[in-house]
Image (cartoon, rainbow, N blue to C red):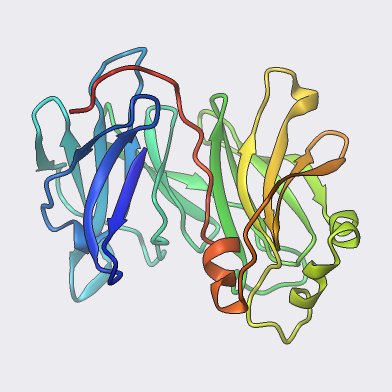
Length: 276
């Protein structure tokens, strides 16, 4: 896992690569990481005991659409730049850490397409994003999530509260198709504290967050993990049933965005490689 550590004063200290199985961690050399928009961890123990970290940053202060990619290798213990800077053609990349899938790190944008970086070939590519929902003119106030699970890559846009689609990417990036349709109205009925955040006057776009998406070997058990007020809820993507699986600590409204919009769960591979 790639962990961003802060001190008690809220100041960023360092990035760590953590092995949750062994509890070992390594501290990444800084190399101006405070300028990074997004980072992504690349680790495939079936290929190598070494990992890489991909850093996306702005390449010029006067051009927010020009970016640089830096690569850290645990094998060499150092950072290096990958090729020349590149432009995103007016598309704003979101400052959300990248997701590794299909030998590439994937970055989100606020547009109908975004970009991925193939780590093996050090090549930039373009991929589709979900279309603008019917009845809307843009993506404002939409919450966008991306997840990898069991070698499947998914993107979710939540724009209208309780109903949304889960999209899956084809491996050749030719299409993003609807894999699941989600209706959370029964969840709201079961957990009425969500209703106060469905009010149009509420400053937050959603009364919940998508904590994780889990594809199971048995497809009938594939699910979303939702972070709703006071609970972690498992929502079955096939039969639309749900259950609370964990009580979460009470929070105040000031922490809502942190806990329900930006908090993401990260699955990990149990392994005993030393990261130090």
